[in-house]
Length: 322
Image 1 (cartoon, helix red, strand yellow):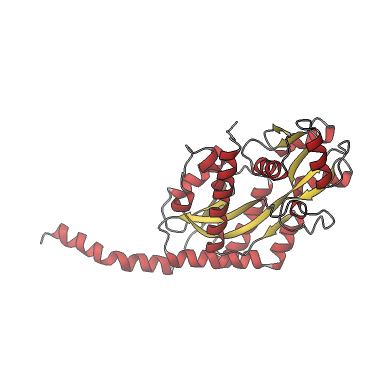
Image 2 (cartoon, helix red, strand yellow):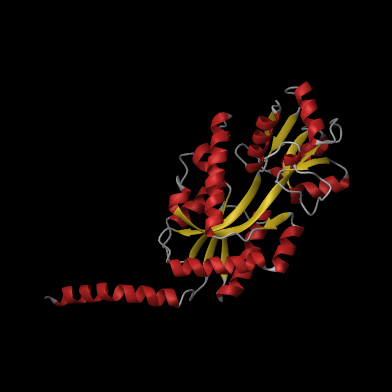
């Protein structure tokens, strides 16, 4: 046997031991956590809050890297293609369940097969609020008015295919109403027009809606989650009028396929400790979001359920990207 072949054989025999040793010492350097959203928004703030707390659990910094663009596909694809060593992770979002049906050319095309779930981070409900000039002070009022005046209500969203747009489409389908969808590039410009009365209604993230509601600039009718929000305890859920209605934005943590099970287990435990932390839960609640302590199975389940739900809605309503 040649010296070269002996060396190659030695490396092959040593590889399992080296991999085990690397796993046992993981993490030995900083971890990068990618997010598909720009800095400064709610998703960025929540991602950094989670990363900071998880860093304490793991004994290494978790560096958040913003790679916005492509409906979050740039960040998701980068992680799906990254080396599966536990040092490159994704703070994935509802867009993973939406993109396959809405924009099938985006990668990863099959997130459930191309990414490994670690655990849930949080859920964020939307608030259905209206311009005070609209004669509706409850979800039932709104539905009755919309049925009596089909196509008269201009209903804003953060953009075609955004979760709050799909929330509207689900509401429209279940309520049997016709409204005019007015897509914006983000929630802020939509809120400006809602305040001015140029649109009459929208589902907005709780953190964005609550300040204008408290000013009296808009009136809250309902929240999109199955249960009421602690920050708006007197505002009913849409489900109290339309049973079974539940539409929220969520984020959870993913790793590349092939990441060693012991590494995934440590990450899952650190994430769970973070979302169970009383201070973290309080700080999230103050931002209008609900910390979720679900494990990998829970994240896999919500991704599968939302992929089916939003995919069916997108096809039935013939929703196309802007």
